[in-house]
Image 1: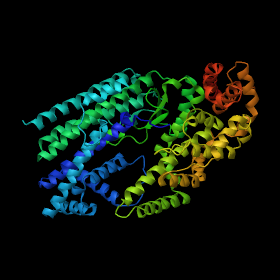
Image 2 (image 1 turned 180 degrees about the vertical axis):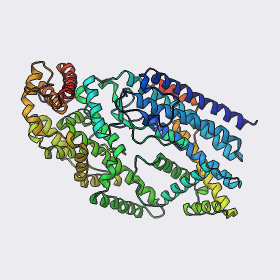
Image 3 (image 1 turned 135 degrees about the vertical axis):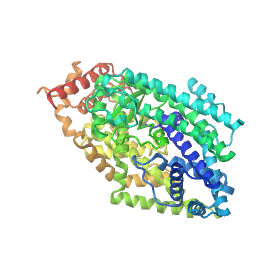
Image 4 (image 1 turned 60 degrees about the vertical axis):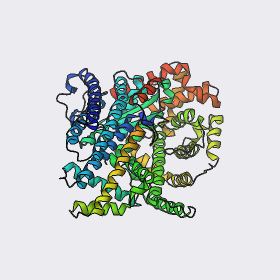
Length: 159
Length: 460
């Protein structure tokens, strides 16, 4: 009564990973526009709000009891990838509280080079999340060379 | 156009094309369905538009898949537009990484098409399908649709609203009122009627997703106490780290809480299945899960030993002890397995096992409330015990009582288990071989089917 070893092929897991991929790029786009002082779209604002909520969740010891009606992003996958990315790149991880402050300040229009740098680091973390998610989807440990996309499919068809 | 741009175009074309051809397969399934259920100008709300009473086998699942592919295609199209406005190489690199994930994701979603094949050609006998449909309607909701898939790559498992996260890519909410459930049964066991009770545990997962049953357990006074204890445990673990090491307190809390909630869910699903099926569930469970390492600790599963213990406590409370003792070798093994204390090498599982034990009463309470009238007690079985056994021995499907009312499905399956165990000599190996008793391959599905028809015709 479990998904023994094929969770990565399970469409439910795949669809969660696809969702995470979309969210990570939403944040990358929104932070890029923020860094370059471009006008933010509604989607950018939503992405930054959700990103902020995730960062707050990572700071808070409150236990999130999953609710089936909540967005999948509230699930632990994205948070786990974020934690992994932050611990793999401590030099860019920064302090969560500072990141949240920088986000709030920039959104308020208080442009300061320190805040811009902080958001640049946040963007790097989300770029890493995207790469790690891709590696997980293609069964490769993060940091290893990504395989040809067909390899996984051929392996699946044999097993 | 530089390399990044052209590579992005290639990936976007590939992701979009993969999603489209898979959506076309779903369309073919929908077009083969009765006219009233067809999709015209598919919208994301379509699953809400399926009227009560329409033929629905696989239809809700197909709509779900269709909507997911629509959302994926729309997302890729949006990203093609977004790419034109990206301000720097970093954001373009991110777009490229994302689009690779869309290609891999779209291709891997391919597996979900096999679910439609199972919906079109269900692997289970009709009697079991009636039972699964009835239980799904009661446990999950009248607008839930279950598809059973005989799978070669996994054990008994379930997914609920599996592609919902893809809908959310485009900010489209999925329909909360319709639950799409896919239950997996190992391909080799698709005709093993005595093991099908394991599916009831799987439906328990769907019920939890839809009704938040674990949240209910944790909302009790004892549940809140245990959540506070998680914080205490995480603090203790963080403080106990060797000097120089720093722990992430919130990550520790989340890790322990995630495991505890998953274990509660498993115990809850066991409890639901035991309430509905009585000892039958324990027999099926032990025939499959009981033959694995009883002490194995999982991220999502408590040890089998602890699960046996919780199940026995519950079955004894429901009055099943005497009936179960009629097969002493088997019963003694269950009880001996439950009596031994598990040894935990790590702090997290030791903590979660203790927390789970302390919540057993609350778990059973929530399961009892949720199961309602479906509860099966020994007093429901005793009056029919000899009659069912006599019919099976005479080669007659035990679907109707002498008073011409239908026999409950839980009674039929339990009577069949007892018949099979007795036929196997009542020894432990009879537990493993029960599913293969030849008489039952015909009598059990026929009895389940006839009883369902009788019940629908005359009322229970």
